[in-house]
Image 1: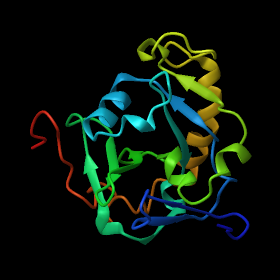
Image 2 (image 1 turned 45 degrees about the vertical axis):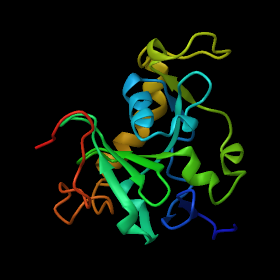
Image 3 (image 1 turned 30 degrees about the vertical axis):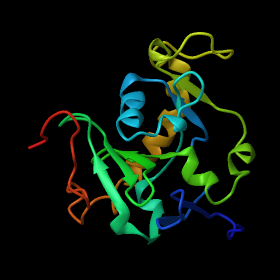
Image 4 (image 1 turned 180 degrees about the horizontal axis):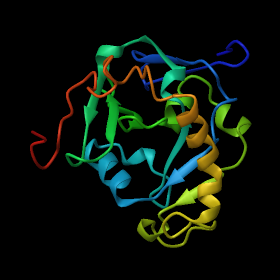
Length: 197
């Protein structure tokens, strides 16, 4: 699907949820992969291990919260947390597609790579190679590429300019994933192994 210059569209697998990215790919760090146990655990709990790469990695392409506009299917979004202090992890209830990871007050929405390819199958290749791979301590053995054990200085250099710019320009505000107070998620978080109350 073609988009106007400076925009892109994302969607869940079935297309009931759709959103527009209003400053893409200008305002993104590019492709990142996290191999942490929490990301692996989350995808296992929602029965979507197919979204992991062969070594347990979750690929995301981050954007600013203020640069996402929901087009349809907001009611399909379901919020989960692994713990009371954990990330707000979003999926589409219609087709069980993982959508994004968010945190209150942080200028970052980690959109799953599959939300991009659901609309444009070539978009990731146009973004170039993966720029950072982190938490290799939890990755499966045998990866043919370098993965930082946790987060290296080089990894920080990839994401810090994005985060600093987001903080300066208050890109965390007006996130469609949270109510107008910027704190309350639009869908009450659900836990898996314990109550979040």
